[in-house]
Length: 118
Image 1 (cartoon, one colour):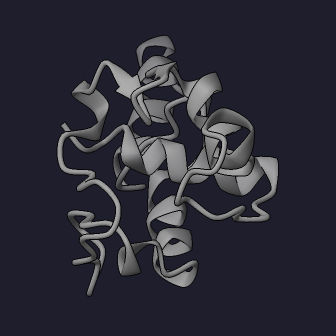
Image 2 (cartoon, rainbow, N blue to C red):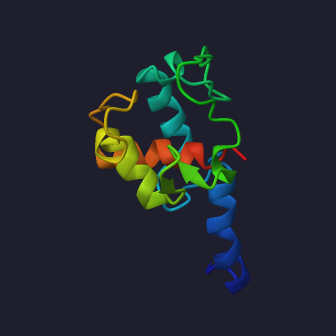
């Protein structure tokens, strides 16, 4: 028995609905949240939804998605954020954010999570 045509439209949406945070074109936000915890970003930043992320050395990342600039320099776009996460020293010379040695995929997944913070 073949599925009715209308089911073909709703089936992918129903499958995605069970995945929690959807892939927003950057990566999986839940994976990004886990990477943030593993990388100990919370030692310097307060990050909602990440256990023990209560650092005060860097800016709080509450409402990150609504901020106009990244590090006060770059426009807050996915491409700029991914670049900044991978090579912060290239954006802010002598800045406090260390080189994270993130892969492109890891940076995109972290960005996916940060863009959920509205």
